[in-house]
Amino acid sequence: MRLGVDFDNTIVRYDALFHRAAVARGFVPASVPARKEAVRDRMRADGREPDWTELQGWAYGPGMAEAEPFPGALECLARCAKEGVPVWIISHRTRRPYAGPPHDLHAAARDWLRRRAVPVPEDRIIFEETKAGKLKRIAEAGCTHFIDDLPELLADPAFPAGVERLWLDAEGSSKAESPFTRLKSWAEIEKWIFQRARS
Ligand SMILES: [Mg+2]
Image 1 (cartoon, rainbow, N blue to C red):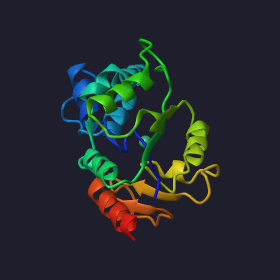
Image 2: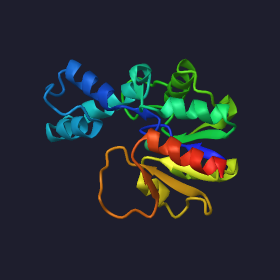
Image 3: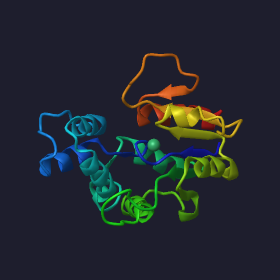
């Protein structure tokens, strides 16, 4: 097994961060549900699209130091390191925010991983600027499995053939059938991985 893992909204959860920051800046009332999408939808409905864009630049840049991992994510990656399952973190985000100060968003992501002591070697941490670049890197790394929160990414026609696709559906968003293995938490991911890794 060679495991590829997405970063944003797969390892890192932004819900509390966006909610806290948007409330603190007076963009949304505290009564808005503490989920990133709920904050975004409320800000858009209130005509705050430019504020939302700038808030994202902050949250994926300097603000991300305060972002939390999904429960169990770092523990699972640590177990992979300990039990010899090689892991690549392969993700895409722009290098600079679309608006506001020109933070280095790739450096912020690497800092987060370093500060959390995520046991993945530097050369297996890959940030691309485009989805096409990300898909190419998944193929180049020779991943046998890839975990992502976005079914659209997994369903992309350019997704490398032969890589088993795991969908982290932490929201339990849809009851519809999925062509991918759907796992609802990192506890489920860990169980799934180590059942396979042993067989
Ligand atoms: Mg993601």
